Image (cartoon, rainbow, N blue to C red; front, side):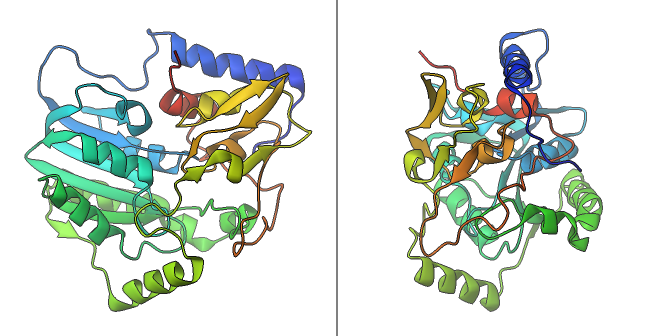
Length: 311
């Protein structure tokens, strides 16, 4: 596993060009969406900022699945989906599903014989299974399977990615993915248990942080991140943000708009030129040089998944 290393302006612009090319060339699709009206075998909706959830979604997909990006499908004017199996893969933010996943679920209609959800988390999954189950039921969806997979924790105010990579937990990732994939393939009925200790941990966190319990990480990007003087204006952040909330002003990146606090822009900036604005009671980053992208996912993959088409 390698961290993103700083590169010069020329290379940064080249990276941006490759990323934009992956958005524009229709002969190289990463996520195919059938237009013939035929019923899909397995549909997997995913949201991913650093590639962990995209990697898991790919592993679960198999050969006959269709992967669809939530950050793009949320703009679908007719959000009606039907398949034999429908699944959702996303990171767990503050123990629940990200706001963009909640919003997508709220405006969409799903029909399938088997539903599953998988969360990726760094420290604790706690109430995620209950949250997903309740959210689905509100939309008339009965999830058959809900589980979670522990990955590298990428929330930079609390976790040093370099230390995370040295954590023995990452050695179990392939095994856990294989277990989850096998369970889904077998159409197992299983919901990861939530313990009283999980609920107490969650309650303590929300009481001390005073975050919104339904949308704890939804905010404004200008309150969370900023581009330092190291910015070379390559535009990667403008192509990568799931809300399209970065723009270039006089060759410098400026954040303004909706934000998931997913930190995709921070982790994937080729120059490491994007930093987090400390928001008490959360601490400053313990290691500003530590950034992460899942080694099985490229920058172009994430741009392809999260890029927004602007008018």
